[in-house]
Image (cartoon, rainbow, N blue to C red; front, side, top):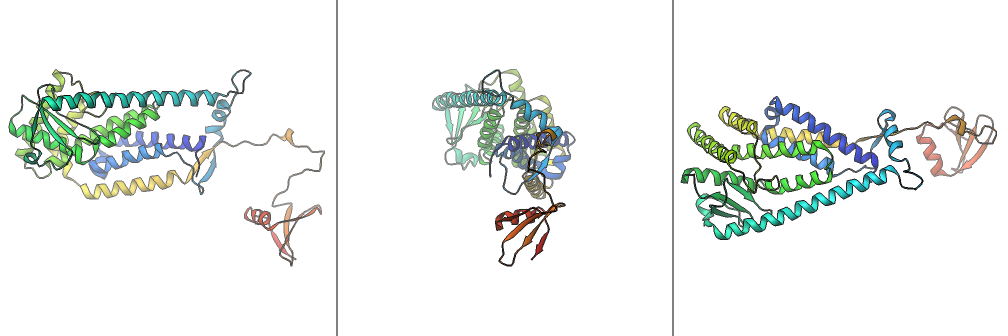
Length: 375
């Protein structure tokens, strides 16, 4: 198992290609029909894992790809000026530097907002978690006048912040239930890891597409979990709450909706998709079967993606052969092996040249298709 330029390239190719494929199928609602919302999250996480583990396994099959890699590989190995520094040294340095800067920024923002939210929690009114069936031990539900829209925050100490105005007790219960689903599904943890993926591949636009779509599926899954046993009338009430929350987000800017770990400022088409899913009952269909289908699809893609690797391939120029020396090409058509009675091997060419070789070398030639004659 090793990491090479080509294994990293294959991870980027696989992750980006699958992300584009899933996005195309998503827009046509085909992916949801096949895999369900929870299943799609499994597929998206597979894309992230594939890009985070760019290894080349020992049994991988190498496929020559001159058109794809030769020019690129030669270009990045060119020396810059008269120094021994090559193009790939500079590109790698820029890549690593960008990743470090973004990760530091991500961690500092998390620490900053954690402190601010902890302060809001101290000044807000704490609600009893048992009243809303919230069973996460570290979770706190805080009613605060300093936030405009509901949000959940935290990787270890979980906090649900609810605005202290504009919602009835029934509305508040639905909102808390939705945010609680984010906690028990560990959406905040996954979201943080996806942000780390974006930090590593900060130059790849497809990882941001993955993050945005995954956030939407988190919302769709929470909607599904909350309304799973609801009647049509209760679902209508839930949709009304969603609309109230969305209107507040459009009128005011949530200071914590920065795309880190809190709620993001949703696009209008995302809200529309949630309404359509709930009103048509699509969230109730094929949940278990869809998740199994997604796991099977992801497993198949995982095996295939690690089974072969594209690499550059070069023919040795003819002018590098020294035709006037004793060196010449041997192959399966002009040479063979003779196995002696003592178990040792002789390598003989068609022009009579012979050389005794050890058993390990003989086995390598036999695997390459050389003929063996018993003495």
